[in-house]
Amino acid sequence: MSSSTTDRANLALTVIVIGVLITAVDSTIVVLALPTMMRHLHAGLGTVVWIVMAYLLTMTLLTTQVGRLGDVLGRVRMYEAGFIIFIFGSILCGISTGWVDLVLARVVQGIGGALVGANSGAVIADVFPPETRGRAYGYNSIGWNLGAILGILLGGFITTFFSWRWIFFINVPIGGVAFGLALYVLRENKVRQRHHFDAGGLISLAIGLCSILLAMTNLASHGWSATILWLAIIGMLGLASFALIESRQAEPLLRLALFQIRVISFSLLAAFFQGLGGFAVLFLIMMYLQGVRGLTPLDASLLLVPGYLVGGIAGPFGGRLADRFGSVLPATIGLGIQAVAILVYAQVGIATPLYVIIIASILNGIGSGGFFPANNSAVMKGAPPGEYGIASGMLRTFANVGMVMSFAVALVMASTRIPRGLAFAIFVGSTHLHAAQLNAFVSGLHVALYICIGSLLLAGIGSSVRGSTTPTALPNQRSLSTEP
Image (cartoon, rainbow, N blue to C red; front, side, top):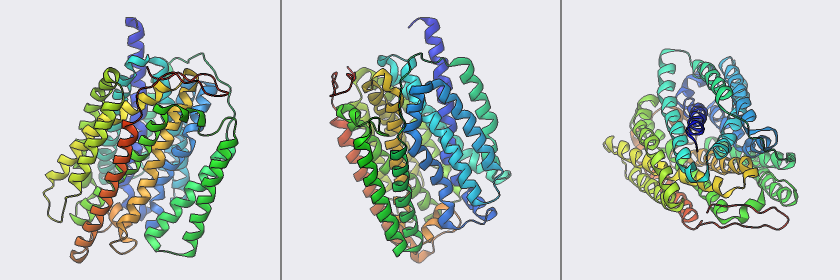
């Protein structure tokens, strides 16, 4: 790459990092404001969690489709449109007068976040050659970790000293600057692909996931009922219909042909199990710090900031290792370090020194800095140039499905050892546990964390066996180039 090309590529990467940072901010900033929003919007504990889940679920459902939209209409164009929709959704969130309004506005935000997130990886793949993409994805992980830190700090600061509505309004100037930079820096790739949209797959997946998540949240807050049974049945039928529809679609929501490439299929599985196990830990530790140790949401979150900071620093190093040695080593070692971090978390008790939480969070940050850049790089190197959008979207879909499911799983597991509904109250920071409940909750927490370790070990197996890749020709498909 020439000097001018390199400079423009670095500017493009800066814009992408800012975009990822903004979407990451809104994955954590809302958590600290939940108690305040619950009071002002007169929302119940069982409904307020959908303020978080609506955003994640929308991005989960749309990432592959908007990634495909980027392949059709231009990835840069869709990336820039994502900022506009995200800003509009943020305004709607800020002016919401009820919890239903806010959940719907979070859906709009999620649409914008999906456009930004699904196309950011593809834009990097367009700008950077395969031998330097690992480094680029490493810097991209800085955006995610810094966004998570800013979400924690800004969420606590704004909620404490200003109105909760400003956690959404603050996105307007930041998103406007990012949009302006994207218009100035990013250049559209001339390659276009014709695609058909998989409406049937999208609807069936939405029905399946929403029904199962509703069943799980109702189970945690209200206990077993016939409604939960019917929701679970509808969810399973929805997912079964999704699998059937996808097997017959010419251009499915999840492009099954890509699963014939070993490195992509196992990388996607690693992303799912890492999201399922790794993201649940955040909720479980927040519940421990608030419910057992009596910390405020802001104080509890500040203990996790060092881990996010170290994760942002470690990301570029993990990306460079992936460029030099391939994706298997840094991704698998990163997952192993994350498993060790959760093992440290699983030893906490009622009076464990809080510095243990900081140590575990730092280990977790080092592990994530090794896994994410390498895993992302493996998927994008394995995808043919015409499929960057759909491959990037599939990666985010698998990771987001794991994250969304982890949220519900964490609440369900926490509610097995303490009264139903109390787990929600602990999570949002509106109550603390009584002395008689502490040991029971800590015992349940340990079981939940060991289950998370098991999920990360499954991710590690998928990561370690993905192997080196070779060009693969698929029946009735063009050859799909893969990582050398």
